[in-house]
Length: 90
Image (cartoon, helix red, strand yellow):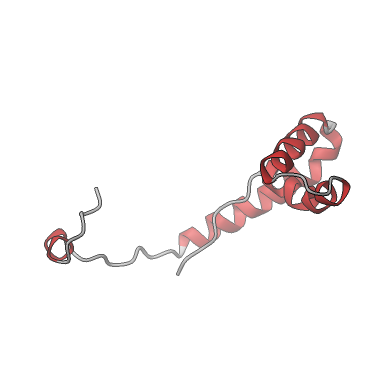
């Protein structure tokens, strides 16, 4: 079964503030939204980062727990892949 990857601290904060940045800056380019969010994160005082640290740690714990029960899917062997005209994965 697939599990979603870990969400880092900055991404968690960005998800919470992205809509505000877009609303306050109509017509802003996608890349500029990311730049503004990065600047916001850099200026965020350490005490205000604590909730995001906790969210990131909780997500990491969730991911590690899910990976304990993860079973790698069976893949075809290289000969079968080559027969289908695809390069085998390294």
